[in-house]
Length: 133
Length: 120
Ligand SMILES: Nc1ncnc2c1ncn2[C@@H]1O[C@H](COP(=O)(O)OP(=O)(O)O)[C@@H](O)[C@H]1O
Ligand SMILES: [Mg+2]
Image (spheres, rainbow over the protein chains, first blue to last red):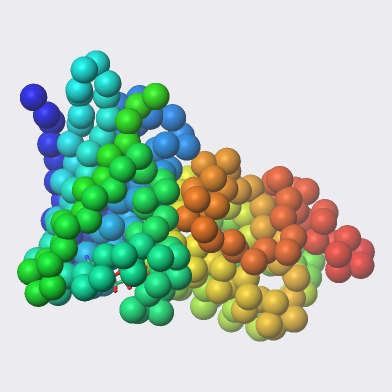
């Protein structure tokens, strides 16, 4: 019984909507202010990547409740060009857009887990989780 | 419908306090406005207060970090104030440094520090 909410990423303003939704969910789940900031930042990075590199996509947010452990699961998915070399985009400073290249490696450090599934020409799905401690 | 970040002038300093969540447009506009105001007023220092900023992603950090470098290029001193613990923690975890040479706990201490650095 997972409660799910989502935001379609089409315009720049949807990045703001997605991270606000994430912050509200994190707050409602009882995450502290530091974890709220981590989750908000992670969603902002993934939503902006969708907007920049795939044009459109979506962010789905789900509450996790497993064996009495609670957490938040976020899925960022798009049907864009995909990521050719997943290892490379996880290197600090790697960017194809003149960005800081801190997004994906940063999200990995901010969250408890990150999983990237991407196929050239078919799109990208990135799943991240954070558990309540 | 973008709100502007207000920039106040006090003596020969500019005081900027980011009071609400920045979207990408606001962030870019803020950068331009700050440099224009610096040029127009000939201010020698800037206090940039982030007390009300509760998260910062790599894009906004880049815009703010670039603004800090640009202020230095224009020969003015900048003091960064009010960074909240969650923001400091996430910035370090993202691996981002804002290149601020001078920081203070709050706006008041930042202004004092800036006036000292500017030589009274
Ligand atoms: N959803 C995506 N689809 C295609 N490529 C992506 C996607 N997300 C990230 N990338 C690629 O990964 C690189 C690194 O992303 P990131 O770490 O967020 O840094 P930045 O956005 O600053 O470039 C991007 O420059 C881009 O080439
Ligand atoms: Mg990015």
